[in-house]
Image (cartoon, rainbow, N blue to C red; front, side, top):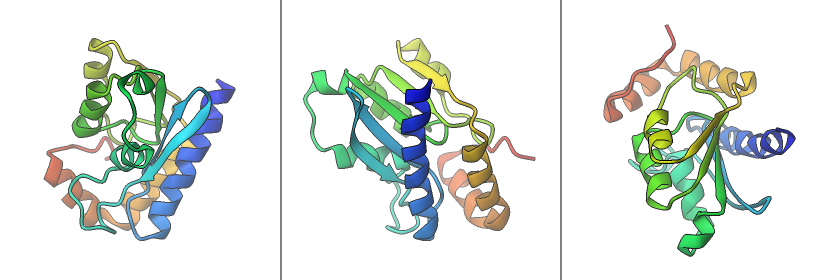
Length: 156
């Protein structure tokens, strides 16, 4: 569990980078054999992108790995991954996804589990507060992004 906390702190650093750049505070790191091999954060707003979620940016920064390398990795993400990011984890057969929180938004975690991926929710208050503060300060931007992907927030 200490290991998970350590790597999630790195994902949180990425989320804060996104926030500092004017983006949505979601971050991720890809870890292989206790070493971070990829880092990323949500760049939808900064890059006017439709795919640069934190997890996708993270996997892109890791570069083209061999299949067996992905199968040794753990993906750490501050928020429950969406369908696109979950699909990428499934495509590359990443066996474990550790999420910081899923109170704000729940992705298709059961889809991951049904396909043999271990999903660990750390339920970290820091991850939740970071995104909740952003949503409170930027409700129109958040709603617009949810609308694009057909998602629903768990916040009332």
